[in-house]
Amino acid sequence: MPRLITVAAAQLGPIQKSESRSVAVERMVRLMERAHKRGVELVVFPELALTTFFPRHYHRDIEQADSWFENSMPSNETVPLFDAARRYGIGFHLGYAEIAHEADETGAIRKRRFNTSILVGPEGDILLKYRKVQLPGHAEYDPKRIVQHLEKRYFEVGNLGFPVIRAPMGGLDGINMGMMICNDRRWPEAWRVLGLQSVELVALGYNTPSLNMEAGGFEAHHLRVFHSHLSIQAGCYQNACFAVATAKAGTEDGAELFGHSIVVNPQGEIVAMASSWDDELITADCDLDMCTLGRTTIFAFDKHRRPEAYGRITGQTGAVAPQVWTKR
Ligand code: CDV
Image (cartoon, rainbow, N blue to C red):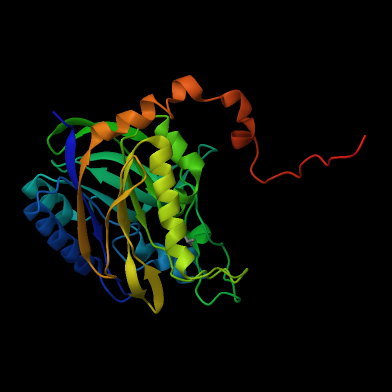
């Protein structure tokens, strides 16, 4: 019997700054209804799915940004998503901004802010939580940028690592599932940490501008989508897993996000792709047995990995200059 699960990337069109969470949640519930009609068992929503991508907006006082965050999950506004999961018997993945009152590295309990995602089971249980590790952007207002990207201002680096959970989903007793959030997908280290926990399915939400706003050099527009897909396809192939990668798309608060949500198989092939920049459901049947080939042959980690040669991966951040060759 193949281990089959039907998944959906539930891409969201733009959510404007003025739009409330309840409007976004209504749209998401409609997507869950449509997913149910198409036999979907797991729906993946994007990063920061409940509001506009607010890190493009500057608040001098960080406390003033608190209205973008959730203090609890489920919150009053998100309960309909959990109800829909139970009603239709489908799991979902949701990205949101989280406020947590918890101990920091010094042991002091304080208010902390994270870019978070959760995986919710078909009975409405939160199965796994992840907090974004690779935070892009900047912490201070940057007058050179047309659009700000203030993730480093509003969020702390995630402190949960890259966890994987084995849990029932759809008709299957157990699937090894992990999460990534947006910029994480560009980092092979993140994929490998999930791969080293035998991940079979990665749920990944993103908000990526169509233009590089760094103004640090030329990047041809068509390469924006290419680099996103390249990273996800390579991550799936090299770690023998599926990914459901879901975008927020379209023009939000005057800034364009490129969409192009995809589902990728363990061979690194795109098996479904969104074509609109609006709310759109793309689905795929994933046979999890496809993960076996890669992980028992070319990427049989136990046989072929050489951690003694990889020390620099965890030992340093910036690149060092190489030794200079000199003629003897
Ligand atoms: N939300 C993101 O993490 N976006 C980044 C952009 C800023 C490059 C991304 O990697 O898509």
